[in-house]
Image: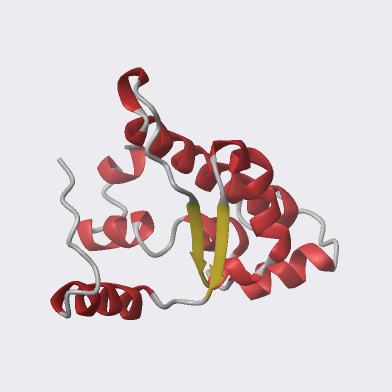
Length: 144
């Protein structure tokens, strides 16, 4: 809030700090998780503007992901009904990092089966699902 009213930054600059220069970039100077992995493996001491270790920042990120998964689990099993959670899927580039995945799995695996699909194939998966519905192989599901 102080930055927003400091008159040191334009609205566009503040937007960039919120989206694009936050997270790993703000703490470690990179958005590339492979670089962060290297920093963690090298045992780098405190780095970045806030003086945190790469390990602390990376673990905190995994913790935040686990918290969001937990929040979504509450929604699908809401109101004491039988949970409808079939499993939890971790995908994207970060899913290549076994250490990062293990930090998440250790926290949320009690919720259900865990599936890890490294890579960024979300659009292909959406396409394939739509094709299965259009071909009659699968029935479209409706969520209320």
